[in-house]
Structure formats: C-alpha cells, structure tokens
Amino acid sequence: MQFKFLQEQQCTVACRKTLTKDEVKNFRAKIDDEYRVNMIFDNLPVGILREVKNLDANGDIAHVYDRGFPVGYHEKGRYILFNHLRFTVHHHFDPKRLTSRVVGFEVTPISVHHKAEDDTKTPPLRTCRPQDNVLTFETERQDVVEKEVIFTYDVLFKDSEVRWASRWDSYLAFRRNDQIHWFSIINSLMIVIFLSGMVAMIMLRTLHRDIAKYNQLETVEEAQEESGWKLVHGDVFRPPGNSSWLAVHVGVGVQLFGSLIVAIFFALLGFLSPANRGSLMTAILVLFVFMGFFAGFYSSRLYKTFKGSQWKTTTIRTAFFFPGLCFAIFFVLNLLIWGQKSSGAVPFGTLFALCCLWFGISAPLVFIGSYLGFKKTPQDDPVRTNKIPRQIPEQPLYMHPVLSCLIGGLLPFGAVFIELFFILTSIWLHQFYYIFGFLTLVFIILIFTCAEITIVLCYFQLCSEDYHWWWRSFFTAGSSALYLFLYSAYYFYTKLDISKTVSAMLYFGYMGILSYGFFCVTGTIGFYACHWFVHKIYGAVKFD
Image (cartoon, rainbow, N blue to C red; front, side, top):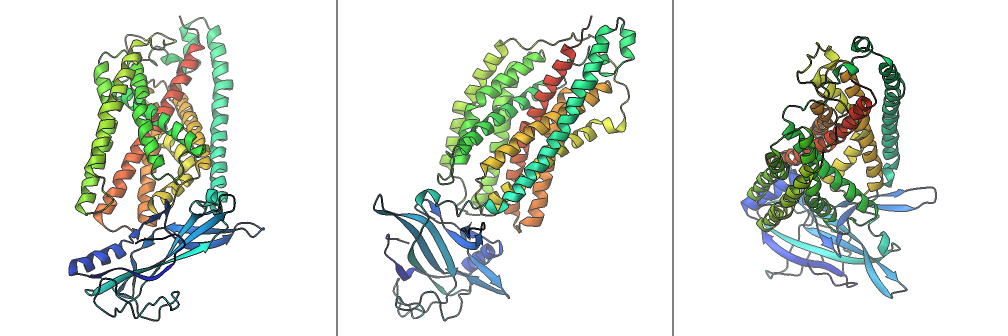
C-alpha cells in the first residue's frame, strides 16, 4: 500500500490471490482465534473507532479506538474475510507552521466479493468504481473459500481540530475509568491506614511499654515472665538455612525494584510515551542490565552479614539465575512462535544482542558490585547470638509458616488487583497502558502494604518465640505473587478466548516470568522492612 498525503484513493487494488486449501484453513483458524492486523502510519497505530462518548457537561467528545482490525468474522457457519479497507487519515493544519500534520489513522474493514473485468494484476472492478459511492457496496460478502480474493483499499483525508500534541489522546482514552481507579486507590489506602494503625499500636504502645519494663528488670527470670519476643534475643540473628539463595533473591529484588522506580519516574515525566514504540520495554530492559551492580552489592553484603564464605558462588547465582531462568523460558516460547511461523517471533540477532547485554554488561556489573559489597563492613547485630540454638515451642495452627505467608500475601495483592486488571487488559486486549500516575500511587501503596503486613506478622511470630524470620519475612510479602498468578489464570479463563495450546503456553509463560519478578520485588520489600524492625526493637533493649 502506498499513501500520498492529501491525495485520496478509491477502490485501489492491492493484490489478487487465489487461496489454496492450506491458506483457507489458516485464515479460518486466524478468524476463530480473533487475530488482529496491526499497521502503522506516521508512527500512529491503525485503529477502529469503537465509541464516541460525552466526557463532561461541556459536551467534549472523545474518539476511542481499538488498536488494529480483525482478519474477519464467523457468522452462521460462514467465514467472512475483510478484504477491503477504508483508511481515514485525520490531519491538522497548523497556521503558524503553514503545514498539515497527521493526527489520526482510522480504518473501517469491509467484506466485498469483488468481480474483476480482466485478468491483470490491478484490474478495474465492476463492484467498486471510483465514481461510485465508496461508503456502500451493493454486493455479497467475501467468504473464505478456495477461490480468488481481490484485496482493495480506500484512502480518505479529513481535517481535524485535534492538535499534534494531543493526537495520542484517542488511543490513551482511559478517563472513563477514572472513578474505578480512584475507588481502587481509596480501597487500598484504607488497607494501608489499617495496617499503619496496627504497626503504630505495636511500636508505640506494646513495644514501648515492654522495652521500658524490660530495661528496669534485674533478672532474666523476671524478663521471661514478660513477653516472648525478648526471650529469643540470643537466636533472632542466627543465619538462616540456604542463606546464599536468600541473598540471591534479595539482590534480584533490589535490581528489579530499582529498575521499576527509575522507569516509572521517567514515564511520569513523559519520556516513555507510546509514541516511541517499545520505549517502555527497552527502558526497563536497559535499566535492569545496569542495576546489576546493585544486585551484586546488596546480595554480597547480606551474605556477608550471614557470615557466609562462598561469596563467589552467591555472585554467580545472582548474575545468572534469574536472567537465565527468564531467558530460558523466553527462548522456548520463542521457538514455539517460530514453529507457528509468526511474525512476532524475535529474530536470532535480537537474541544475540540480549546475550551480549547479559554477559557483556549485566554480569560484570554484578561481579563488581559483589566485590565492593563483600569488602564493605556489614551492619552489626544489636545482640549476640548464642552458640546453642534455643528450642522453639509448639506453634498454634494460625502461626503455621504456610498459613501465615498466605495471609500475608493476600493484603498486598488486594491493594493492587484492580489496577492489575487494567494492566492485563492493556497487554492482552489491544490497548495501551499509559496511566502512570495511577500506577505510581498503587506502587507506593504496595510498598507500604508489603512492609507493614510483614512487620505485623513478624512481631506475632517473635512473640510466639519462633526466631526463624529471615525466609518467612521474604515469603510473607512475596506470596502475593502466588495470588497474582492465580488471578492471571482466572483472567485467562474468564476474559480471554484463547483455544490454541501455543497461545495458552505463551500467556502462562510470560505471566509466570512476571509473577516470579513480582515475588522477588515484594519479598525484598518485606524482608528489608522486617530487617529494620527487628534491628530497631532489639537495639532498644539492654542485654547483658
């Protein structure tokens, strides 16, 4: 297709094609799977006008587009193919520049059973003539059968009052969902306020009273009658089992957390606009690569706090475990896409470039950060650790580690699941996600929720004289990723109409990567919040 600015075209023949049996089968499968065709003109994606709504009492009108257009549709046993496309290019004249610029790219797909007058590649058509009214076709529709199909298109140009700076508003029209977003944020804020009240009660009343009384006692026997959390002071900083893997996950969490913070900041400033295609994904990928330094630094420093000696092994795990796992899943899914001969498959050149970023930049930065982190003096524990571990009494059912972690992950997920619905809809249902203001607020709420619920449950755990808080603090907040994955499965079966095995594997593969990254981020937030809390309360008590 060739467009010439301000030169309209009518009934232009793009090509004529006799469909084979395999091509008919392929077209019908694409129609059943609701495939959509995506095109770009002047960096604007083509869209179908879905609705026109009055946004307020002033009568402002919003043109809302669905990105791309369907291959065809299924009706009463017939497969109808859209073989005629009517493109409407909206342009705005700027009197200051004395130029017109493209501000909209709209398409109307039509099915027409064309009839050619000769056998040339671009024949004149009896069913569509330039002098006729191109808005209607008095003819039958084009079925997907083993016959010749003629593909045609029109190009119309229309003046528009939309300015160049506002041309993306039709694609980013989420204002109709503002009330839902605000309801979600208010609901999440209520959870944060409730948890903040519990943390304040623990810190200002219970702990303050316990610490004041404990510091006035003279004998350990008297202290044992007061509260359970003080009894485990000699074991609370005992290094956990599999400390290397805990340090690795914390380092990866710091790496992902830093990448998200910087990416959201630049998105708020408008640098990651959808007008720059792929900018958001590219920014997150590049930031993740350069944040490898912080992953190595914090994982190595934490591992030294655990008095570990195999820091090189921990560094290698930090540099290669999470990126390697993601790359392996992505490579297998990409092979499946290649097997389907899809244009969405990532070429080998791009995969090689990703490997160069991984091995050439990210991994060396992890090693440098790990070296500096292991050289740095770790944070001193406020109390000494006993040589002989204290026996943990039998715990009540509600303090079981699995149940406690599942309860802890429920509230962070509840704070973000409404926004998660919009994110999944934007990713999988042909929309753009560009409401980074709401995303920032929800992310801040997520941070506070993860930190506070972990502190509350950690306090209850220590009061039960269970000092194995290291891993549990990570899993308490990180278990919200389990709910994220379960919700994505619910969304798959209720909102999406995917029947092919490969498509389902792509969905769950990518959502698995996303859920595991979410596990590392939320777990790291909960871990450092609990780490600060434990240091704070035991540092305030005087021990002999």
